[in-house]
Image (spheres, rainbow, N blue to C red):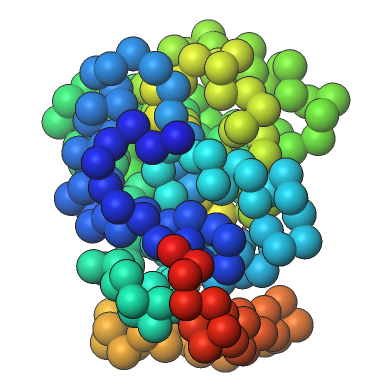
Length: 251
Ligand code: UDP
């Protein structure tokens, strides 16, 4: 499905593109000028583990026009599989960088998802950070099918170039795949908890912790109720090592 020349790596049957942040921004720019609609997914180890049990989700990840390496686990896995991804491209950083670019280019952005009022709070913070940015709509809503039509017409009314969807995985990515052609948005991205980070509701690890590649440990410490979800990480690591040893030709 990729309409660009970037190479990719298959990690436990999920395609991740070997892109940098700059490649990602270039992809967004060209997507907005080329007139069709593009889905971007931000793959971390939890996504890969969910995709093993959810074929619809796996297909959506594999068919997305761009699949970003979000998470140190993905970068390490790519290295182990012999096709190293150059850097981590996280949802939070991508939203920030796209916002700056949108301001410079006059692109309209719509924020969908997160708890009531959080998208608006995040929008206000980005408006003061990037004065002139056109955030043309914010709406919490929910990924429930009954709400879909109403949400789509809100989006269509504001004609955004970019849509950020914060419903968590896999709901956000399934929502985008199902509605992208209807809402006719050039670039739509599932961004997980990014509005919560921007609005300051959850805090990101200090940069030195991010650099050490242990942001996940910080998150576990701050939000211990995630421990069960995070068991996916050692499981992911074990499966990647297994596939490295036993399936040499996976890629
Ligand atoms: N969320 C939502 N509606 C839902 C489920 C989740 O708006 O039905 C939001 C939630 O408020 C949060 C984001 O989706 O802002 C998911 O955050 P999380 O960190 O759990 O994302 P993940 O790690 O699953 O990508």
